[in-house]
Length: 143
Image (tube, rainbow, N blue to C red; front, side, top):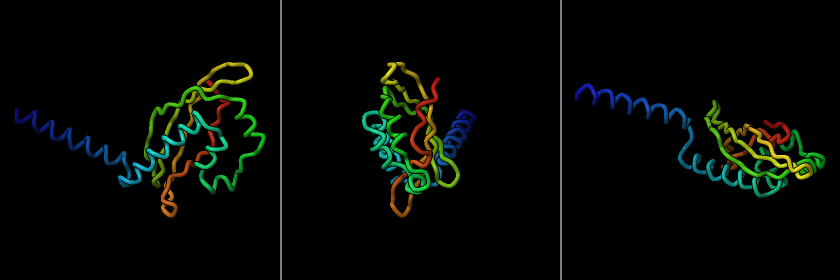
């Protein structure tokens, strides 16, 4: 019985160490804001327009690589049928990477496909918000 308690205690310590490492250096407020931002971004991708999703992109990314009218017109030919988070991981430097599965329907052909997209989220301490720093999802590569 004593041995079992020792094993359980070691397991509990290991699980708590892994959980704190996975959380990185994020505060509770940052994690909450990240979750809220990711939910809103996902809803925008799923139900809104890419014009609206641009507001979630890192301002430096928008400045360095602005979205063209041609790209927005390409997005207008697609309809998102599903948006599901598959995994999430903390990266060095305080960034968070999230893999998302997106169902896409081409409005012209009505063909549906699934695309896996990697999002990267960066905390902006000055603005006190999260920015999506990987750009808009590439919905043209499919599985």
